Image 1 (cartoon, rainbow, N blue to C red):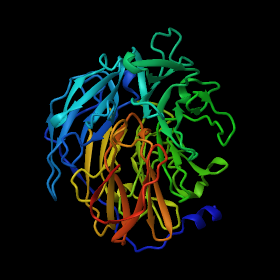
Image 2 (spheres, one colour):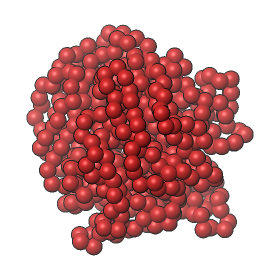
Image 3 (cartoon, helix red, strand yellow):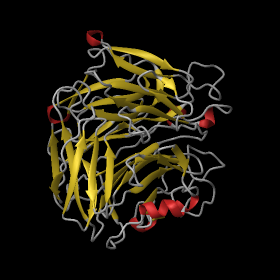
Length: 495
């Protein structure tokens, strides 16, 4: 623990307590449904009309998914319902520019056939599944990630599936296979099944070794495979399961993945949500090791509500809530349904990172300690004031939207990379920012969380700094120059 803290010890001024206020929606939305929607309940956050204020699309489960258009103004957050395909059975959604036309599209996961929606002007979306030659299948899909492999103009899409609904002996020990879809020129996508599958609830393509290649991490729900099975790492491009070489499989009730370098060595740490402990893994040149318990991120039991049974974690996401230059951690919590051994009053976590690298629970003080059954979520600056706001999807309860009203926060900036040709949003790139005597590294990915994805500018808190030096390492490894950037702005990085 001592070595870890020395690496993270950062000077800086003190900032006020994080604070959020709830935002009422004129038309609320609920993720609902029976057994097949105990899991899922995601949200996609994206700017689909080009005004730098993100919209969001929420899964509905047994009800149609819903688009909320952003009409916020300084000091007030406003959202109205927009028109979108009334797809039912949706578990989650991820935004990305699939056809590289500059407009964000949506990968929609469902209980049933998955769908790819092409994005158009003013948040319009049309079904392009057949046109793009994608096999949507008829499985119970609950995880997704995407990457652009070198030499390919179209993204490689990974889909994680839960229980095989056609297996009469299910649900226990009836996990379905997962899928990787690779574009094959004019013939569309070719599908490869990944076996064994262990009920994936989160996937993430990430360059975890900083080798220049994003491998596929899969987080699996042990509850449904009972014996055997583990978290998986599929090596790219050969799609073989990693064994050794810095990878040690673990078995948990895996729900979500959050990835961010918090030690300053350029390699991403991960948080794997689960039932009971939320597992933080620290990266090093030798691979991953479990973080010490004293780091404060295990969040194993509720901190309010009077229920002492173990928690159930779902979506996890890093973000600098008070802009002090240190990434904090949000975790959505909630009982699967009526599991008697797990807490039913299970508040969401807001873990604020302190100067010594440990995390402190401030969810109750910040006003986000909801006791609803939360699932997916998104941290994003919805009103353009430089502070990360929060949207949370709940099972059988209205989604919750929170505006960040924290006082005396630090400075900030954000980066919005673009490149011509394929992969317009530079998925797989790294943004490195010098802040004092350390470097903050942020990877651009599609995936992770729990069935929830974002395609927004990369937000970085600066503390009391008014400028910062930064560079981008593009997906093919070409390094951009170090440049000085002014605080308080979104900076477009164009290749």
